[in-house]
Amino acid sequence: MRTTSTSIGLTVLRIVLGVVFIAHGAQKFAQGIPNVAEGFSGMGVPLAEVAAPLVAGLELVGGVLLVLGVATRVVGVLLAADMVVAGLLAHGSAGFFAQDGGFEYVLVLAVASLAVALTGAGRFSVDAAVLRASRRRRGAEEPLPA
Image (cartoon, rainbow, N blue to C red):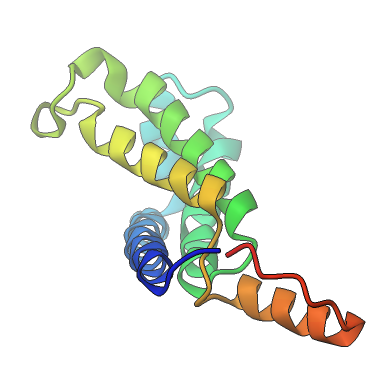
């Protein structure tokens, strides 16, 4: 059973991470998907015309879902994969430090997303509320995992 402080920590991590992804997804839409696709193509992203709207949508919608704590484990895995691919295709050759275009920042986002995927949303989330309601309907007395 998790402590309240653990659930608060997971909630803070999930919300801040979600806000960062919302900002990056919104930024891609604001730049225009054709411009993002052109940038992706220049970085060697395969099928850049398909990848650009998918990545922008994943980051924007995935960020919102993280903030709310909906489908958190699935969204965390998808966002972690997004950042690993970004690190490999766009940032890996620039070294470690983000100020030089390196993979430092995307590494932190990937690991934070993976941590959320592995731990779940925490007690203060839509995921947990749905699980509690489901267990009440079934009359289960099992403790909540998150």
